[in-house]
Image (cartoon, rainbow, N blue to C red; front, side, top):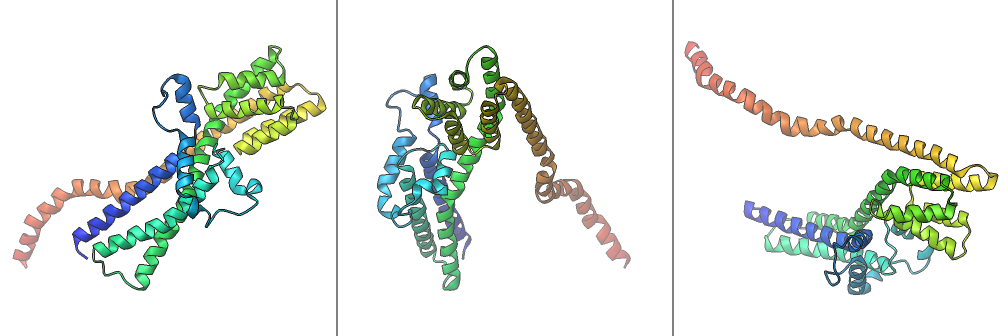
Length: 314
């Protein structure tokens, strides 16, 4: 295979992978950013489709293929629905779009790879060709899982980092005389610009309380939707304080200090991992170039002067 053919194959693969990442990012992206832009005045009416419209379009386009992989029943109680909630995706079109994109990529990427190999006149045949197509198909099928997991991690990290501030604000509100429900509503209003995801979750809790749901159930739903360990601890703490009649404000203050300590410890852990992560780039990328710059002139002088002198003496 010539260099031109190899370059063409690499270009086709990179373009296909980038297109898939872009489509999945627009499909499974969180709608909170769009709502925040509308609140801040950054997005005008008619400026473009939001996440809900993108999900609807993708779901309609991939509906025939989505039926090949979507579960027939039990989706409401499945783990994938909880993962969608953890990612902040609550659209009814999300399952159809998700499984439709998985099936489409699993079929489209091998087709494009085979077409690229054919156009490049590659000599990959038989078992090698089948292995390449299976590898690309597996990559396309599991790529949405990676995008969804990344969206969940980003959202949970944002909630975790801003949760101590929300607890402090709730503590101040309750010490000022507000009840638990009113404090949750106030925190949801004040956190809308700093952490839209947390504000949206607290607003859903208030809506459930207004609809007549018990407070413990509404808070448990909050823990299930976020999937953050610190939020689950907050829910348990509030429920126990209500059950035993202890001071919720004092419990919130203690829990806020605990969560802030965990946030600092995670930051320290991340900083401690930096030298290990820099080890391989330093060894394989920076050190060879540095040694080449430092030792290069000396090696050239040795080749020009020392080696001819030694050969002349011999």
